Structures are given as C-alpha cells and as structure tokens.
Length: 572
Image 1 (cartoon, rainbow, N blue to C red):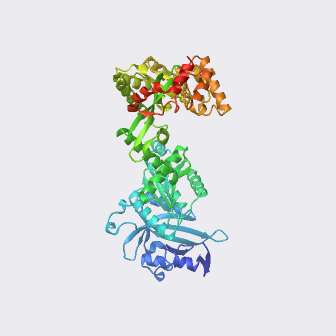
Image 2: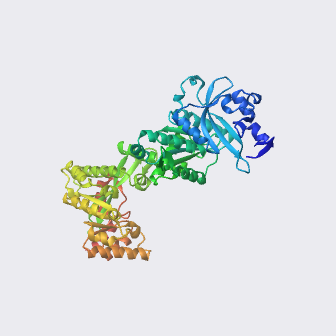
Image 3: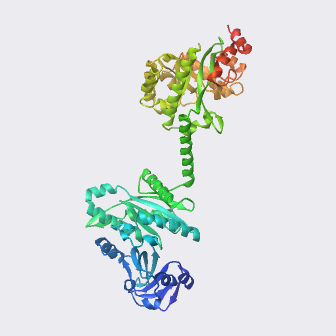
C-alpha cells in the first residue's frame, strides 16, 4: 500500500485512507492513536479528537474475553509483526459488537517499531433482532472464532461484497490430518490448547477482512477476500507444518485444504461451503497435507451423470427398458440356431434408444449388475413364453465385466434359473467381453466354471479386440467364439481386417471351438466366411434386431429367403 509522511509517522495515502470501507487506525510505537479514518468514525461514532494519544483498549476495542486461551493468544500476538484477533468494539449506538482487528507493525530501517496500522473489520452480521443473544451463539468458545452459525451469514455478506466490488472470494475448508489420533494420544487438554494455538497461527497469515471460523472439532473455514494462488496455499501449508509448542511438547501437524472460488463457482453460500468440503476430502484422498481446487465444470458433469443414472434407475423401475432379439443362423444349413438379446430403452420423450446411447452412463457402477439380472430374468421369461408357442431357440445374453466378476454371480444365476424350472439352463447362453477376463482371470474362471456346472454355456464376445486372445482362448471355458463385427464388416475391402478374421478363425479351429461372425451384411461376407471355415453368423444381412412379438413372423418368412437358401443349398 502506498504511504505518505505526516509528522514522524507514515500512513496510507490520503485517498486510500479516507475512502477505505474498513476502519483504519494509525498508532505510534507505543500503540497510541495518531490518526483514524472516516470509516472508523462512522463505525464507532468516535471522532479523532476523542481518541488522539489513547490506546485502542481505552476507547473500548477489547479482547472478547480473558480466558486462558485468549491470554495465550494475546501473548503470542505481541511477538509478531502481523497479527489478527477477535475483538468487541463499541459502536455509535453505544452497544458492543464483534469485530476482527488486524495489526501490522511497521519497522524503520534499524528494525525498530515505528508505528502500527490497525484495520477494524465489522463482524456484526448478526440480525438486529438477535443482537441481545449471548455471543456463544455466534462464536466458538475455545478459539473465539466465528462458529458455523455466524459463518453462514458471513459467507452471504462476503458474496454480496464480492459482487458489489467485483472482487474475488475464496471459501476454504481446512481439516487437520489425523487430529483424532493426536487428541487420543495426548489428551483433550493438550488437544484444546493445540486447536487454540493452531487457529491463532492461521489468523496471522490472513489479510484485512479475511475470516477464519471453526465449524467443529478440527474443522475450520477461511473466507479470503483477496486473490489467492498456489503460492499462497503452499505457504499456508508450510506454516502449518512448523511445530507448535504445547506444554513443553513439540507437536507437528499437517492439514488438508479444499478451495472453491467465487464467482467462478457461482452458487449460494451453503453450496459454496459444501463444494469447499468436497474439495477438502479430495485433498485427503490425494494423500493429505495438500490442497485441492473445486472444479465447477467437473462437478456439473458429475451432477449430470448422477441425474442420468437416476433417470436410468427410473426407467428400469417403470418398465421403459425392453429386449430386442437378433437371429443367428447356420449358413451351411440355413437353420436359425439362436438369438441374441439386445437391450433397448423406449424413452417416453426421445423414442427408442440404442445401447450406446445409455449404457456408458452406468459403466463400472452397481447398476451394471442390476441391469444384468434384469436382462437374464427377461430372457428366461421370454424362453418360457416362446416354449408355449413352439419356438425353441437359445437366447444369448450379454454380461458386463463388472457383473461377471461379482463373487455371488453364479449363486444369483442359480436362483434365477430356479424361478423358471421349465426352462432348460442350456437354453441360456452368456456372452462376455474378452476384456472381462483381463481384470481378474482367476475370478472369471471360477465364476464361469460354476455357471457351466448349472448347465449354462459361455461365448466370448468381441474376440480379437483384446490384448491376449490366445491366452484367453486356451484358459477360458467358452463354448463359442464371436468374431467382432468391426473386423467382419470391412473384411472384403480391408486386407488388415481380412487377416485378423483369418487368424481368429484359424485359432478357433485349432482349439476346436465353434465360432460365429457378427456384422454379416451381405451374401459376399457369408461366402467369404464360409470359405475360411466359419459357418455361424448374425448381422443386418440376415435380420435387424426386433421385438419379441415380431420374431414368430420373421421365423415363418425366413425359409422363403431365396438368397440365403441358395447359399445353403450350394454348400450341401
């Protein structure tokens, strides 16, 4: 801050001094008043002539109480050039109100105290109708800091001030690491003294009308009304790491700090505090003794994802999901050998949604297992219904890696099968991604073996897209290999895709495993696959996925498909 000379004492320039919103007091080396600014006179109703040559205590700027903790703090303040403490001051109406007094000692070139610059910030954010209440309602008894009750009001005032003055505001949640362990080891008395000394140390690092509040236990909140950066928080954490002397013991602390910045995080005060807490917990997850900035954009994405997942749960509970079925054929005989169940969402507003439009929402969440059980249950019900219609076709059901690797997967599958005793377990086939086994090969082997003991068989889906296909093919107890459609679709025009398809078919034949090609769109695809030794297929060239009610009619029409029938006859 620029300074100008008045007599033998320097103080802020006339414009800053006169027009500052905060009350400013200039005192000499003995802390006797030399000058006060208009904001001080307006706040207290006291003119300069009334306080000239007096100490602040003489005109009723007093420590909040005389408890042991406050005395310890006052003694420590006397040792520092910059200090901050809670006070009460007499206002122009004669009543006492809470304030924050920041003292900056200014030394001359010889290192001697020349004068003091004192800033008195009003903390009377207490509603007028509640000012008769005891100060314990608004201040923490141990440290004298604002408590959560007062903090919520101070945050709101700080937001209004930041908006009016176009200034930044940082809300910081600070939590001492492993404080409970320290408190248990040293006792509550030392723990309380530690919290009091800790709060005073943090106060010394603050500026102007910054606020430190204690909201419970070892949890503190800072309201910072100046620009903050990484350097500020590094210095804050470094200061916290310096040992504190409590009853002759040197105690080392660290803290985790979460920060959110207003107006970048443009929300209400209680939400700002919650966001700062979220960032603080993230700092703890990162290993403690660090700080973390809340990211509003990332939080909005998480909120959107949460809302999307909740909407999916609603869809699951309100019968908006359904299964479509895509036929699978033996190209050599022309027979239909099964169907694959494919999930669809009949969204009331957006129409029929394909899996790629909503399954990513539930990736790696418990909802994958919930959906998987729903699909298995629906497939078993459909097998029962088709049986009454004389349709006997196995249903292939896709199982996510998360679901397959659950410890109780085979147990739950057995329970679902038991609920449909008329359905032979061999009519249910489970398709698992090749990548599923990569997460935990032993868990995959164990669950798959147990399911096979129940009579359920397995197919490896998207084979060839993983990193260790040969290993999986040798280890996993699979009954069918599905060649991924991404290779089949372009195999006629892309030599690399053709080479991959040839390799997969070669490996499957070497291990005597049947295979099925996905993505078969034309007769040319079918002929090429058959020439390579693959005889099972599904794809748009055969049929698009369809509702269960449409399958009987499709089955009736299939024998009339002369193109595919001729393909089968030419290979007989």
